[in-house]
Image (cartoon, rainbow, N blue to C red; front, top):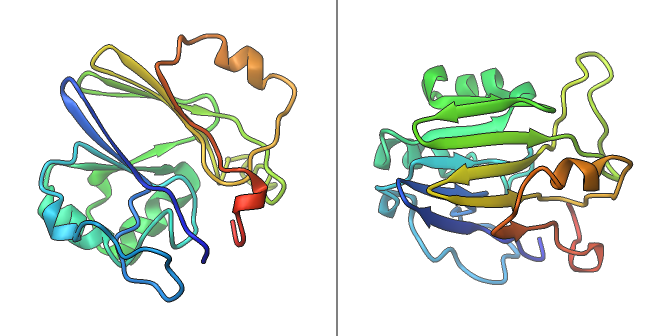
Length: 179
């Protein structure tokens, strides 16, 4: 694993952990800067897609314990399975999917349809395994897209609905090895 970008964003009223990767892992270029037990103030913990460095199964149970009010925002297609596998109460998970808007407190999360080189919508359910997110909290609007995203018809139109204050787009494919 070449590397992975995790982010922490603090807004008025919410602390967002975006794809926190806090487990030790062979081949990491840098050790985790935090221990999961240090994260006592998370409001939302995002897992953008089902790769170990984005949904960190090794640290999420400890994150759930350290931040007992935090909600885990994941693709809807993974919500029930993650709750079972990680033994985190299903009520702690927020599942998002193409076009769905979720409101919790003063935070609004909108899933964006995505197309990637690797994954399209699930052919059986139509659910998106790797959504992008537009998050509105505390007067700030941010875009969070991970993995290898492709431009597709309608993306620019979808994004024009918001005035983005901050964007975390996918890294270039040149910087990626296994995503």
